[in-house]
Image 1 (cartoon, rainbow, N blue to C red):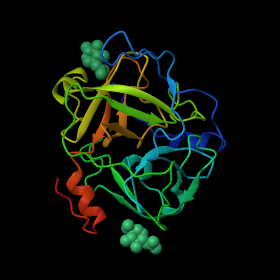
Image 2 (cartoon, rainbow, N blue to C red):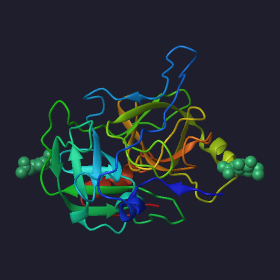
Image 3 (spheres, rainbow, N blue to C red):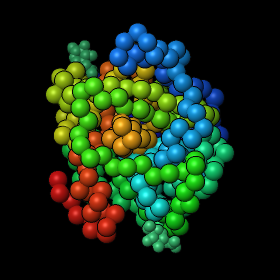
Length: 267
Ligand SMILES: *[C@@H]1O[C@H](CO)[C@@H](O)[C@H](O)[C@H]1NC(C)=O
Ligand SMILES: *[C@@H]1O[C@H](CO)[C@@H](O)[C@H](O)[C@H]1NC(C)=O
């Protein structure tokens, strides 16, 4: 079984900085019934996800998504910033086009979860502290942390610049996709009880032909105005299996303690 992280780090070694030739794999989705069908995926409106950021090792070259928590802190997946020095984590805000930044912020500190990748593919979450405060405006806003776990029936909105096909380039314009919640026990069975899944994960699914793909990693999943997930891993891409995200509600204590200056591990 091939389970792959969804960042584009590996691609950076193989491709020139600007690769944005293909579209994200999103297709028709029916949240509750035959109405609301979106054929061929949807471009996000300007200002649709003002909390969305693009993490770029070289400005102009999208690697991962992330979300703004407050003036100084960005949240993303651990594998998006693992082994990176702060100078290679440029944070692009306030735009639907990753290659046309509203603003660029620089990273002062990277805080990986202390149990990142232990066990394999668990605790895939990180916080990034910026050197300067973000200036908020219409296109640049923080997203609230969740106040309760996601439940069946909750509508979850994913945004990202991820690819349409496995390992393909990022898309120029931010895409959005509405997903449903898959209970963890069901998801665990679907993935044949893989040890890569644990209590800190959140599964989402809509239908075959839709889902997260390379370049979506670290990006936000939002439900009812709260950040509920960060893209972790999946079977690339949109081939009929749920996608597996970091469950932000599960990591609330870690997020709060890290932001307040106490990097302590509770897991
Ligand atoms: C940056 O934001 C923090 C948190 O809101 C605030 O306490 C601090 O005063 C701000 N710093 C500057 C230089 O504006
Ligand atoms: C789980 O196992 C079944 C039966 O071998 C297989 O068809 C399916 O693809 C597996 N699931 C995943 C996620 O690989």
